Image (cartoon, rainbow, N blue to C red; front, side, top):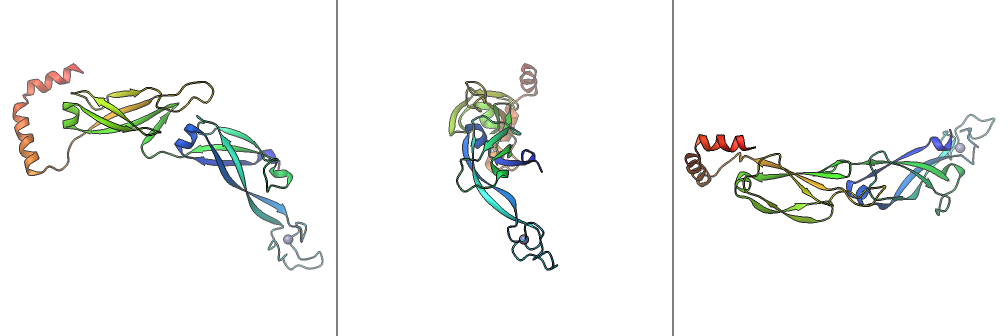
Length: 213
Ligand SMILES: [Zn+2]
């Protein structure tokens, strides 16, 4: 097998891919068994299996290698890693290898190029009255002011809160997508309040709001 055919897949979190990191990963490699010289047998006359490699003919070992990940890499990004200078490595097969980046799905953020999409749930009181909320980003939280009358699907753009561009200066943005959540269970008092609200909202008013967007 050609050494350059060997591909290692390196799994990264979205944060690691976004901001870059030094990643220590273990690669597994096979070397010809020194005891049986790859035959897998104890001797050429004997059919008993080699006790050192258990008949496989190769000894498998894993080595740690250090991989530098630049900020802003995308899923499928390929790195050529030269391991010559890395301590503890031996064997020609290991001197150079290709590493392919695989980015794990994030629990709350979705990536779109260098932008990050975050879906933020709002209760309908917050959506109707407006609110000031803390929004999580890839690095800490930022304050976002939601204006009164905010509808589901509305997008707010947090400039420069996305992923750094790999090949040029600057960063993507974070897009905050609003989702207004209808309550599924109401307390007695909440129900009473909503019923009062329902009486005060005329059908015409609802229609007017609808046509405005
Ligand atoms: Zn052997």
